[in-house]
Image (cartoon, rainbow, N blue to C red; front, side, top):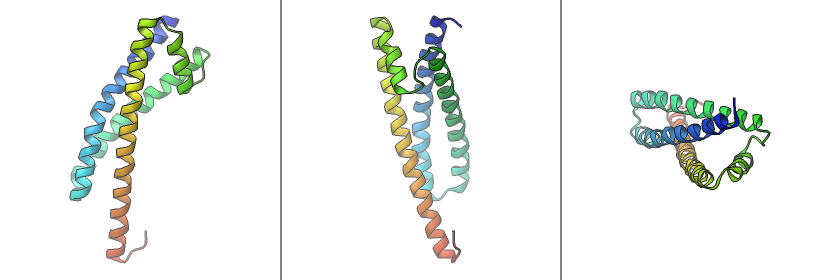
Length: 135
């Protein structure tokens, strides 16, 4: 694979991940509503959809790591930023904006997912107390 193809793949992967995050965020918000409503059926369905999107994000992250390693760069945020800095100005600006937007979206999804996990843990604790069963 040529350098140009690797970079094009990274750019496409970032754009795809932004779309995944755009779909994931409302699902996580819906999951939070379903947790509050204790809607087990809705939670199961939302959970499946969320897991599919997370699988896509995980796969894309692995591909990004592999591409950065193949380019001889650190397989982390610093490696991505180093690559972006080495690109021609117009492409560098576009890719940096897209990368930063992805990071922001991922942080939002992560925060909401953590909050949902806390709500679920709280509900399990309350249920265990009400039923007299230890967790």
